[in-house]
Length: 162
Image 1 (cartoon, rainbow, N blue to C red):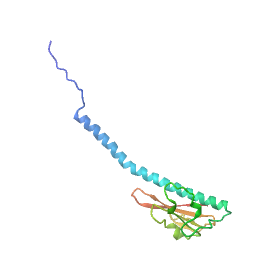
Image 2 (cartoon, rainbow, N blue to C red):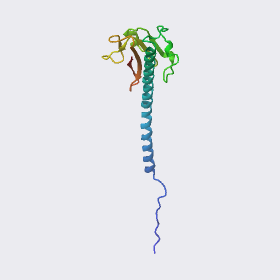
Image 3 (cartoon, rainbow, N blue to C red):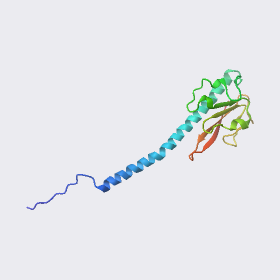
Image 4 (tube, rainbow, N blue to C red):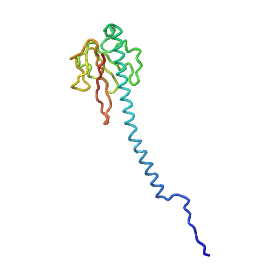
């Protein structure tokens, strides 16, 4: 009988370890690239939700007060938002203009950080993010806010509450 040496493979080769590390690196890269987009989408969703809730609060106020908009409104603020608890914005960044013209509602103020509202105005269907007084009623309010795009730019959006 001859002695045969039996070779045992108890560990991983360097090639196998490098392949596993490369795959793990690719997974980390994909996650690293996806997280900012997910965060941006979450912020945009929060912005839109805040603007919608503010529009609903305004519409409820008008409906509960026989079509009257808040009487204590000045050029920059209203008492009807005093108890509003936003998710993304602070109440200091919500600006309301009574009987607004299209030009002073369409400027959202601090980009990405504010909501502009104007009574007696609606969203312009031909220009996204812009408002108009055409077709507006005394119960209409246009709400302009910014959303982030993929390149880090901001794009104004507009919703109308009646």
